Length: 190
Image (cartoon, rainbow, N blue to C red; front, top):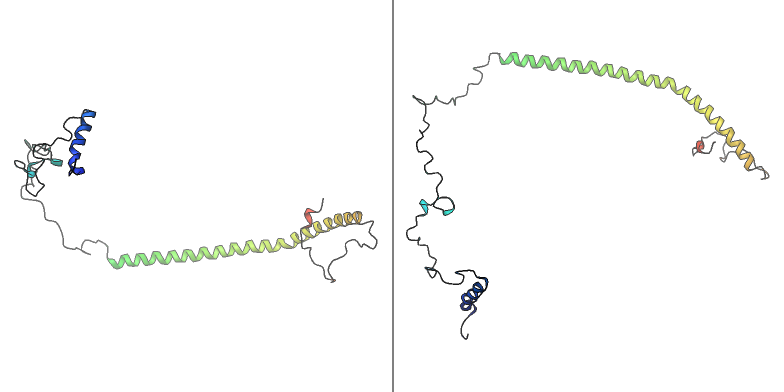
């Protein structure tokens, strides 16, 4: 094995492997295998006559046998119009179209303006109704507040009855001005 490289031993190894696997013709040189890969074509092979993917089968041969080619009608096809005929085929004058569009836009903007006036009136009426209800809502809230305050005062007097000098419902502010409580007393009332 002196002087032999790994590439020299490869065919022998493949041949032994093929014998073990019983695969025929592996590792044996084929006829013409020593030919160098050059740009010359293979003798007797014309790639122009081959079918798809180099096969000899050409499905496109013989398709048109017995069929007549589709031809133009006698006298040829009519000419294709390439000239621009802008404005020649219109039956309505352009100024009439422009006037119609302007009239529709004017009426549309007038209708939007009238609808906006109605909507402003409806909004003003709704706000006026709310303004009229506010005094009644405040009076109801005041009555509810006084009822809650009486319940809280009675509870405070019951809880602090043993503390000397305790004044029920004494304000914690140093002012004679009435202020609303900073927290919600409803959760404290029964």
